[in-house]
Image 1 (cartoon, rainbow, N blue to C red):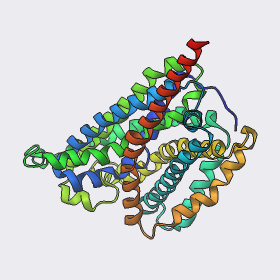
Image 2 (cartoon, one colour):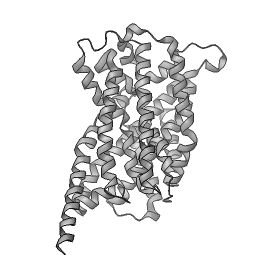
Image 3 (cartoon, one colour):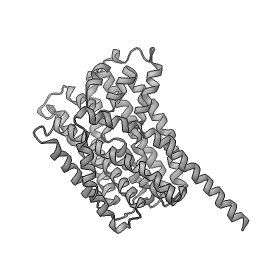
Image 4 (spheres, rainbow, N blue to C red):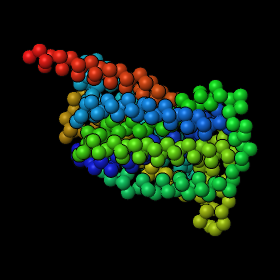
Length: 369
């Protein structure tokens, strides 16, 4: 892979795109099953949890300049312990990528390619995805730069057009005997937006890391606001009992919009088509992170990274074929989104603590010389 240098401003589309991957098509279903009509408040609370997590992770990266997350784990936890710690992270990212591709394959089949076998859709997605990832982080960032405005604008238009379907009584009464469930709903809500952690594998390629912070914040805020507003729009349009039964609430929302003209007759198919680049960017960044995990774990030289990328084809294909149906794939993805809590508030604080301890020891040793 080519380790292209990236501009600080490119952090915005990278962070925002990875936050708005496949989860943004499905997350309302899980929230509505827990928090009911207060799902939008759960999304807001989940964003607050995300801010805390992002601060911890950003400080970890800042204290280890020039290293990606996998390299930081090795540097701070040691050669053997560090490699043991990388293994569960590697497995988590790989499985989450495969499930995301599987769920999106179902979305493509249901709304766009109904006559195409799910195996063919998954295989084509994987091959095209890895072809881009093999060209390096510069190519992935370039794709994000070009395509990011299209799916952000399409999402804003979807929310605006759906306003005709809003019913205020769907969210009333707010927090009535539902406080505990609303708080519980913040956990899967946080999992849905946890894609911002991808920057921990990208920051080392930014040519001016100190200037990237404001663009990271901008990307995080844009996606978080869109998540909250989209959740509110979905709850205002449908009762929670209906949302719980819908596999792709965001696409169902587009299908419910009544707008004159032939262009909008299959608006849900148009939304799926627009969301292809969003998924490619999101899963592409995580595939790049997975490749880096494998390379760091097995000490593979940079010139051989493209072979590690292509080796992901059978791995991802095996994972995408594991779920027997659409419901199982969506439920598994929801579970893995929730597992992001372990990474953010267990793993990251541990490595951050080790970093501070190691830096303090180094400072003491230098002072004794």
